[in-house]
Length: 124
Image (cartoon, rainbow, N blue to C red; front, side):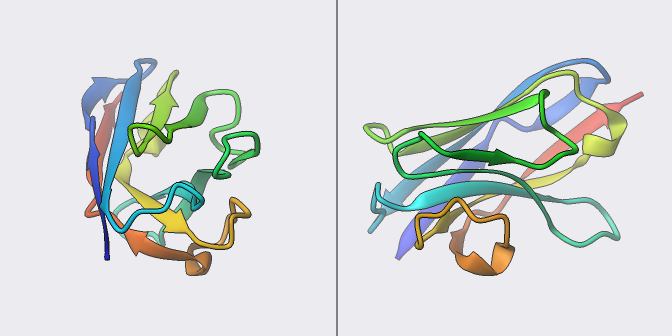
């Protein structure tokens, strides 16, 4: 089993910044790609960003491109999401997950282990 714990969420004003972290433990393999997804009330879970095991390959959703940056520290077994210029439409629960194909997929079905999520709320 792999355990993932997200942190760093909170309430900020539009235009502000937050940095989310995801700490992995258990039988975590640094060869896993990892990703961030989010789910707003009444909406389906959507892809935000993903990163290959080495960090050399990243994918960002069009809606966050240029504002959010995914990164990872394999020595610490941590995943990060730096979020800037936040908008009210970024309000959601943010989840980190592990992807075992190593392809930094945008499909949630390719991800196996998920954290419990951290709430991000952006006020206008």
